[in-house]
Image (cartoon, rainbow, N blue to C red):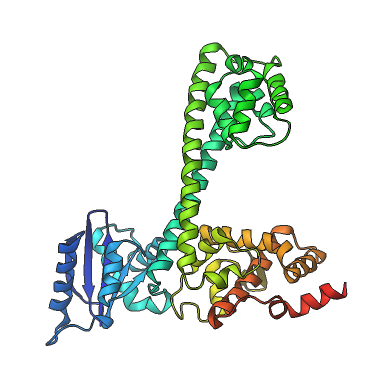
Length: 412
């Protein structure tokens, strides 16, 4: 076998090849792209040491990334690719050289050594389908846009609190990400101009945002709050804050528009996947939640040998820490944020969609387990149910999923 350590950078790859004894056979700096990959194949062939073409299934490549065209090309060519967490690689380097040595080729050789000695402890690159990878990319992009909008919203709220708290009070019934609040803030971002807003102007903004009910009365209430005297900042400071709020409102409006576009794309890609029906049959799962879960779990056959393996990857199973007579059980906080958010959303929604999930949650709460811990256990149980459905290709069935808890719920 050959073991390849690939220390990648934006424009090149530092590659070290080792044999089964740990002896370095070659090391090269290869450019990113087609030419670099061709030289990679030539380097492997030159170190194979046997007549004929090398057996690529006997070549282990370890790299600190699981995405990108280089990684995909290695996997497509037939190499056994092991993407590792940078923290794992850093800990392994400490076992090789405690002096803290830092060198690109040394890092690559440590990755090769890691593949040679510890590949049984790291996960090989999963062969997910192209459509599953597409769902993952789109779902992550959608979620990151939401997170980015939230960050801009919090910055804008902080600025308003500093110089224009009346706006937060006036628009309390409206979401600051709504088109009406953003339009009014963009038109009148400081107290003086906001006090001059008329009822027809406010009503028109509410109509354009699709608000319903007595809009004229709501507009009068907003106007009244904006015209109440408040403590104010000096004019020049208010002017600077107003400019920042106007910019923030424009960014939030643009992000909201792109979020809607990405949401439609995520749903479209998700419904193309053959397992979409299985995911949608689960309680508490819609298009977006299902797309996030499918993309993060992947669809490679045999990727999760057991339901516990899927739970461990999801981060819903507990983490036991034991030393001597001391034993504690904790939640896993080093986990996939995209996946755990989707599972948390599903678990919360399943409390109303599934009687069995609700009965299990109530049972946990009756044992004085906190809300977050109980919700995490519900998510863990739902992950196991999903594993069984995906493995057998069957849709969710309430009676099969929660036999004991459904009986208890019916008796109650």
